Image 1: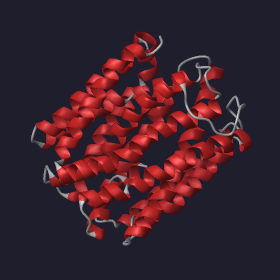
Image 2 (image 1 turned 60 degrees about the vertical axis):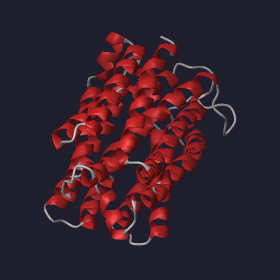
Image 3 (image 1 turned 180 degrees about the vertical axis):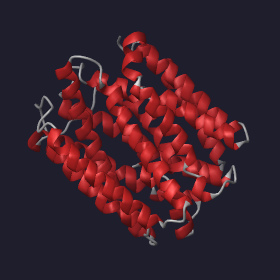
Image 4 (image 1 turned 60 degrees about the horizontal axis):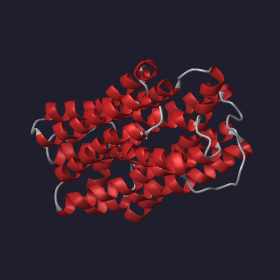
Length: 353
């Protein structure tokens, strides 16, 4: 996923499109994710986590090189839909798998699992940005990412559980009660993360006037602090409790967006994105851990429902930010995210202990 972030400004320049059009075409990624999530939950119940994970990686690796070269707007939309479908499916499969492993271990592990997801964010964004800075073509850079991902899958596949979810109930269900509330908070968390992924590079180029091959540094700063926060997050959650972690995280991320937007310097922007990463680090892991404890819905239904609501932030977010940037400014769009994250901090008191 992170390997796509440095390609966004290149795709914008290659196709000669504006921010509004870019935001609209980025809808395809979110639509593909949301369409695939309930199907992934159904497939996990039938074929298991291992099979769905392997299939999802194949889909991602097949689409990524074409995203580096496509020069047609309709084809870009189709490829982003395919890429998004792979992201949505693997997200569901990995989180169901993580809930099963955490339950078997009998202790908090979710933040650590999400920390390794963030390590991929650092490797993808920093690695691709570094290769682009050395003059390597976008296609060659993405082929390297595909090769590393394929090797990682080959190493990990034997250790994946065939089945990890408690599966019962209908194939599809509408989220309700606790699941719906958790999903709405995930919506804002995913919206914030997706905004850094899709728009931080564009912001640094168009507003802070840096060179395109350094534009991925915003996502690198975000990913670095998110990774650090998640790798120590299980101990933090055990010490402070989930509600406190969500409240403090929302405040930290809101302050980060405000700093990156309002202070006109590159160091301030990078520090701001780093604060967003630190604040968002453990919000989503805490919410996903709570899915394993709720009884309103079975996991193979609750995880896709919550993930789909979260990814609705990725679906609506890039398009909404693009439209706000087109009619107002990109800075205004980021300040709106600041307000939403303050709402997450305030709503943490409504969560169960």
